[in-house]
Length: 169
Image (cartoon, rainbow, N blue to C red; front, side, top):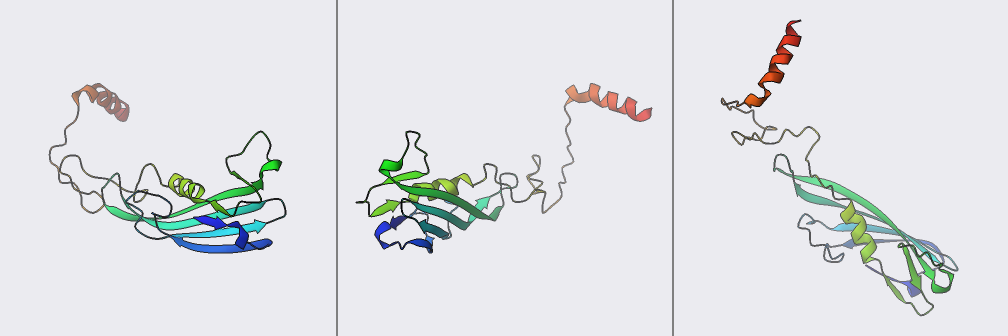
């Protein structure tokens, strides 16, 4: 996702793009649909500010029930293109140094990082997902468990006895 600086006008402008996962160097298989990007750019005299919004749908598999589901993903990033001489010693990672000879800036790392950070670590199809029965393997969202063998660990017997005594009182 390269931005040509010599084609930008002074002031505010918007650029909309449709990207593939290859354009952002993403190898995740869940990215099977295009990624829509909207760049709000403000070109001022000393610097250029780029605010990007990305969105797509991911095809994921639930970690609890192993059923496929779609997740709408939205991410945003901001970059500032600033002349080298105005940078301080504390360089911000969102500031891209440019010179008068800079014609093109690659925003791919910013967009890629922003969208990958938004992928949930625990992929769950819904808050109410019941998962899979460890005994019979039934998906509890769709079917009820018919396991007759409800094993309990005998080590919990003393706590169960305490609960029974409390319930009787």
